[in-house]
Each structure stands twice: as structure tokens, then as C-alpha cells.
Amino acid sequence: MTPPLNILVLEDNPLDTELMLRELCRAGIEPDWIRVDNEADFLKHLHEGLDLILSDFEMPQFNGTRALELLKKSGLDIPFILISGTIGEETAVQAMKQGATDYLLKDRLTRLGSAIQHALDENRLRKERKAATEALRLREIVLNAVSQGALITDENRRIIYANTSFTQLTGYSESEVMGQNCSFLQGPGTDPATILKMRVALNAVQPFEGEILNYRKGGEPFWNDLSISPIPGAEGQPLRFIGIQRDITTRKQAEEALRRSEARFAGAFEQAPIGMALVSPEGRWLKANCSLCDVVGYSETELLCRTFQEITHPEDLELDLENMRRLLAGEITDSQMEKRYIHADHHLVPVLINVSLARDDQGQPLYFIAQIQNITERKRTEQEMLRKTAFLEAQVGSSLDATVVVDQNGHVTLQNERAVELFKIPQDFADVPVDELQAQGVNPNIS
Image 1 (cartoon, one colour):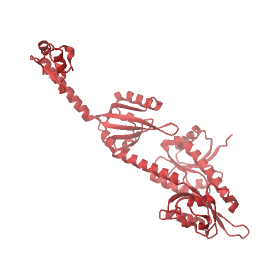
Image 2 (image 1 turned 60 degrees about the vertical axis):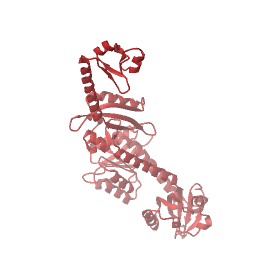
Image 3 (image 1 turned 135 degrees about the vertical axis):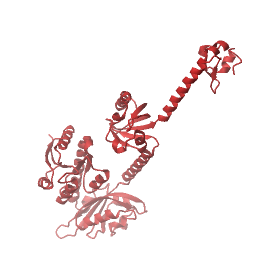
Image 4 (image 1 turned 180 degrees about the vertical axis):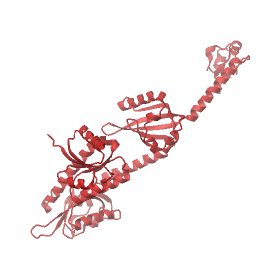
């Protein structure tokens, strides 16, 4: 039987705590928890036996940033997940840089179970790696790391050993790297902040883990997942450093390609001449571009507080929800319909909407992608055409003269009773070409 997780919950709102615990139970996680909402109680309950910390970002007496700082000072390696209703992306990224394992929004707690599992797995792997690194003893252990580049340096960080994987990774022979300082792999694209962080750690005889851009012998840049561990010498022997290196260039290139793709999508999304939106499976607006905001009269902030159901005309909602159901059930891949939105000023806006559904790698629904065109002018034109057609039909029908209306392609589109009698045109000859009528001997004088 799996023992319960020992969790410290940093949250001032008991209701939010209850929601988190409910989500944990849904994910099959049994928590042994305690809630605190101030610095003193946080420090009191911060100990090595904790498996996890779940923290709100802002509280009246405390905040997640300060809690991260205290956790870091304690030296404890405990996964720390921020859960907030207000944290922005930039703040969240900064918190991750400061040591947070992950962050979630309070209105999207369905990811809490998987986030916790990922955090625990990462923590376990990190501790296992640290234990393995601390257990290394120079060349014999380095030789076991045949799939990764491995170095041993002296106390001045000059290379005294390099394995085959390292020479294959960098393009340098073992003789070329002997006596070199490890910094010889650095180049113009190497991040100075990463170099400084590594130097500070090693000067303090502390391990370092990070990603760094290095350069091969031919000048080709490559990304290196680097782990360096200081190994104190036994019985008066000098300090040594062991470095384990893994080429992660492919992964970094994929991440950069994804970032660029997302940037292109964001640009196309925002600058699209028609309305575009991302909508949750429940119907809540997740993102809306300026064109859509112009159509419905709401700002994006105002839309994000609403659902599409709230601004859809009631008479159009049943078909809209049926399309939504069929998309979620996988019965269709996309849908199109005309509907009416209720503008912020309360007038109706006719639109043509195309919707598809994005799913994750497991096939679970993520969000709807909606393309929305304002068809007010088209509808107005259609109404005007109907009005003119009705007027023309009334004029033709009431005329005492024989009247035949022929379109630009030579088709009879309308004739009154007098024309039928005079030209002997059957009633069912509407939309028939004039030359066809003439070929059948019906009033050969019509042109």
C-alpha cells in the first residue's frame, strides 16, 4: 500500500485548500497535510520529512516568493508547486527560475495530480542523480558513463581525464584536451550568467547542474546538459571535479522550433482580419483576438469572464451546443454554422462560425479553435435583394403587359400570366434558357 504524501499547504483560504485536496483525491493521491498561512508557521513545519509544498502566490501575511527563498536557505530539496488565481506568465517564469517546480492556476486544478506526480518523479531522479554523483570515485566510476561525456579535473579545473564519449561529443582528441581548462569549450553564444553561476558553485565546492551552450572543435555550437560534482580528496589528496555532459542540442532545437511556431501562431491569431478565439470544452473564452472583440463589443478581459453561451442568441444555442457535443464525442472534426451574438450594446450581430477541437497527445480535449466572421453586411445585402426581388415580382405580376425577365445568362427567371398566355410559355419553363424555348417552338420571337 502506498503511504500518504506528507504535504505542507501554504494557503490562507480554507475553501481553496479544500478544492486542492478534492483534486488530490480525484487523482488517487492520499495526503497527510497541514495548512499554514504565515512565515512563522511555515518555518515551524518545514522539515526534511516533507514530500511536497503547495503554495498560494499572494496571502495577507505571506507570499510564495518568500516561501521559496526560505526553502532555498534551508537547503532542503522539496518539490514546490505554486497555485494561484492571479499569477501572470512572467511572474510564474521568474518563480520557476527561483526554484519553483511548477505552477498552476486555481481555475485549472485538473492538472494538479499530474503536476505533483511529475514533481515527485523529478525530485526522485534528482536525488538519485545527486546520490550517484556523490558516490563517484574518479576514473573507475566515470568509465561506467560511456553514453555521456565525462571529465575529471584537478583543483584548478584543468582536465586530467576525458572519456571517449567526451571526445566524440566535442571533436577534440584526449591529448588535445589534457591540461585545458574546461572553459575552452565556451564561445560567443555562451551565457555569461550561466558561467558565473557555475563558477560561484564550484568556488564554494558545491555541485552545479545546468544547460550551457558550448562549441565543438570545428566551431559548431551544441547544447550541453552539464552536471559537475566536487569530490573531496581522501587522506590529504587534492580536490577533484567530475563533470558529466549530455548533448541536448536536438531537444533545444525542438524547443526553439516550438517557440517560433507558437510565436507565429500568436501573431497570426492576433492579426487575423476575422475573429479568432480559443474556448474551453465547457464554453469559457480562453483567448480572443482584437477582431472578435470588435465583433461582440467586449474587451478580451471582459470576454474571459464569460462563456460563449452567455452572448449567443437563445434561439441559436441549441444547435451550437449540439455541434459542440459532436466535436467532443469525435463524431465530427469541425463544424460551421450561422448564429447571432448579443453585442455588448445589446444588438444582434450575425456571424459565420467555424469550429474545430484541439486534443492532447492522449486524445483528450484541450480547447476549441473558433474562426468567426461578421456577416452583417452580407445579411443586409441578402435582405435588400429579397426586398428588390419581391418588389419586382409584384410589379411583373400586376402588369397588364406581357412581361418576361431574362437573366444575364439568357435564362427566363420570371414571367407574368399575360406572357404565359401571349407567348405560350409553360409555367414550368422558369429558369430555362430562351434559346431552348425557341428550339422547342415556343415564341421564336423572344430574345
